[in-house]
Figure (tube, rainbow, N blue to C red):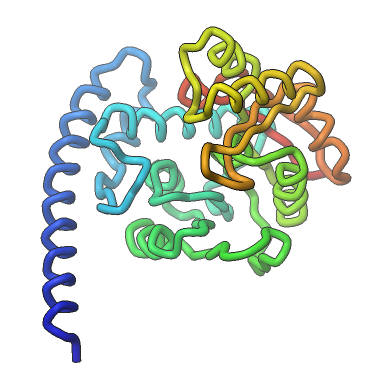
Length: 283
């Protein structure tokens, strides 16, 4: 039996969640109505907006009340995936898809709309986010609570989408994640991963963006990028988690050092006009 304090805390959490659902639903519905009129969207993307779930978890740290940006990021990811599938001549209609890290499903909501028969897996360090994706998008869960090398998904995937993960880790960690992805791609499977590339570095140089880094951190990322093609710095008061930037040739070198796959496509600043998209296909 819960104590009075526990009961009150549960009630407050329920009220916060209910208020967030109501507000976010209004914001996203309004954003969707505006986006469907955009001449930048093709017919397929407009249909996906009509189908996509608009539920947002109240603990979703990626949602800040800007429904247009949130839905736009999902559409942008879907556009990148479709372009890479076309280049690779791959079909996901009944495929298996890993979204890692899935967050609370900003991209997965569009995956479910686009490929309703596909088997989706949400991979995340946040167990609440995994549970939400399981419930909301009929996904399987892959809770990543330790080193990526310890994960045993028990499946191989036709598509792995890795949005905004390598953007936060150093070069050695990027290699480990890419090796994990290659090891869990099905034959002919496609892995899309995003990085901060040349355009992001120019934003750092110009001072129009600092990505949450200190001045010293910004300088460290730029210097590493200029010297060796891969720059990284921790966030202030953080360890082993920060911001990275890598050139396309450097990422091709890192991924190419792993056997069994080849680059099939690259889209500079392709995801949400802020991150490069790299596509590698298993042989």
